Image 1: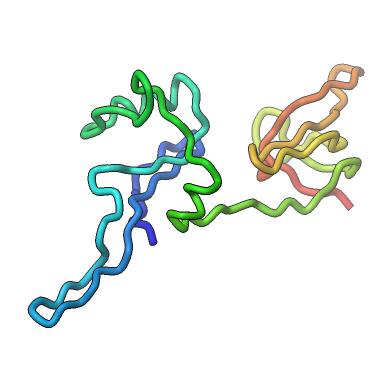
Image 2 (image 1 turned 90 degrees about the vertical axis):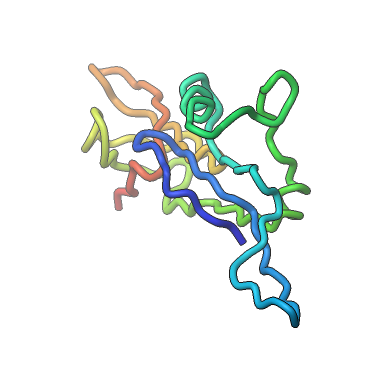
Length: 148
């Protein structure tokens, strides 16, 4: 179980959660709610770059990252399973070789051919025609739809 954080930056893929577990009931005291597994820690799922590091590091109440020299260390698959963190893998409705239409951004309404899909990054590489030449671009999978 996780206590979800409402703070999300508009232009990034950052999510945060506080691991919790149900509290045990005792005869002397009836507790409601969840017990924190890692008090004072917040787990953040984000694409690690200078900008995202700066945003998290300068958030009020954040004192440091866990890791050597305050460099964050990603959790292993085993640690994620032990904490019972739900791993969400988005479903894409197109495959390599399919024609797709871009629905967002500067290249909106452009048609391209899918060359590669990276589910873990939620991105796809498309070959599109720009200025009479084939150009490969990388775009989020949520910004394209399959053309029938």
